Image (tube, rainbow, N blue to C red; front, side, top):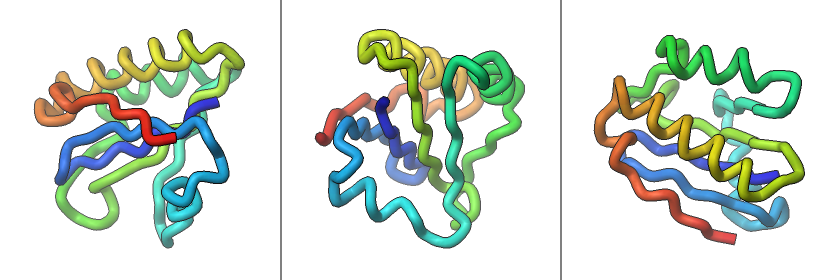
Length: 104
């Protein structure tokens, strides 16, 4: 599983493979958006990204998101993330150009 932090005001995708990472533990802020993508939800969630169901703004409710991608296959998980970045980038150009950075 990878846990990915998406930040809109400072465009970035931060990949975390270690669930005990200090940064991952910070993700429990009030109102934090969490998305799980796995074998059961992949089609629905990709459709949500494609149809701009998830919006990004500079306000606290929609300036970031955590995406958990769980397929027990690191290469496939990263490929799914790259596709999500392309889908988001169609509506939010800064995120479409953002680097994928592995932190832990």
